[in-house]
Structures are given as structure tokens and as C-alpha cells.
Image 1: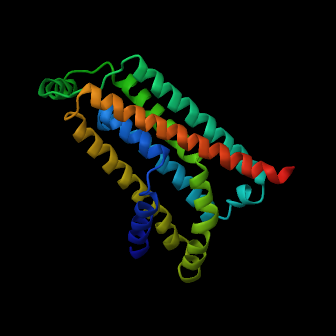
Image 2: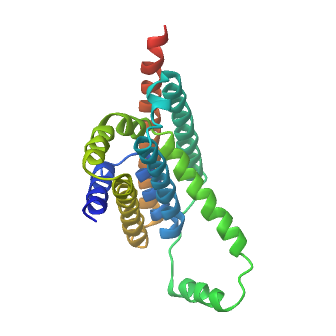
Image 3: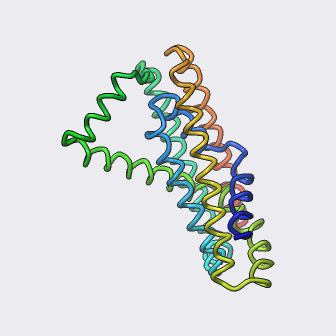
Length: 232
């Protein structure tokens, strides 16, 4: 149980510095509310779980022993963020407004629970699509890759020296839960503040967040060119 709690604290702490996923979660939370934002964070947490499991089972060598794989991840991550940032700025230029939830909206949604809601398959599709977006953003994030190939392996090695495999994997689960907790809080706070903002304020914040995503893309490109320079 101590490993689970240690993993939660470490996952929450390491993920606390804002990155492109956090910017996207906050942007969606401010614009549309909790549920459009939360799946993105959940997807990124699943990406962390995949990387943490790869470190635990020794499969992270696929990346560490093949620099070209790292370079490919950096490039794809940069292109994905450029697409997200540019599309976000285009939406703001078109005048996309944030949605304010009223009591009538809440009542309508509660009625859909009693009455057959024919939009459920569509909602599930959008939920899964947002999870995939978050997973892709997290999986192709150079910062996340470097974290799991530099900082975490020594921690895993020390844990495995004193605990069995099953017990040690609780740390992996806890780490992912810590990341999920952080993104859940970000989505929650963003959705709370969204009803307090005017469309003009939201537009300014959305432009700033999209710009920060593009700055992250520039950093990803820098990491890509830095990694491929060793091949020449």
C-alpha cells in the first residue's frame, strides 16, 4: 500500500508542471466543461501507464537502444501539436464561443437518463476519440519519453531490489493514478471557472493556450533536430 501511495504522490508531482496536455485539458474545460476535457487527461494518463509498464518489464530498451525511434516520436509529437494549436487558433478566428451550462441544461441531461437517449453512441464515440487524442499527445511527448528513460528507471530498480514484482507494480498503478488525479483537478477547476468568463475573456485565454501548445511543438522540433544531429 505504501508503494501505491508513493506512486500517486510521485505521479501527481512530476506531472504538475504544465505541458501541452494540460493546456489542452484546461482549454477544453474552459470552453465546453468537464467531460470534454477529462478524457484527454485520461488518455495521457494511459500513455504514462504504457511507458511505466515498459520500464517495469524492461521493454523501454526499444526506445533507449534505438535513437531513431526517439527521433520519430519527437517529430510526430511536434506535428500533432502544430495541428492542434493551428486548428485551435482557426476555431477562435471563426468566433467559436464557450458554452455556459444552465440549470435547464442539467435538468435536460438528467431527463435523458430516464428517457432513452439516442445520442449515447455518439457521445461514446466522442469520449473515446478524446481519450485517443490525449493518449497520442502523451505518448508522443518528448518530455514524457525522457522522463521514463532517465528519471524513473533507477527508482524502479531500487523498488525491485526490495519488493516482489506484484508489489512493485503497485507503484506503476499509483503513478498513473496520480497523473489521472492531476488532470481531473485541472478539468474540474477549468469547468468551474468557465461559467464566470465572458466570451471575450475565453477567446483571449484560448489563444494563449493554443499559442503555448505551438511553443511546445517548437520545443519538440528542437528535440527532434537535436536527436537527429548525431546521425550526421
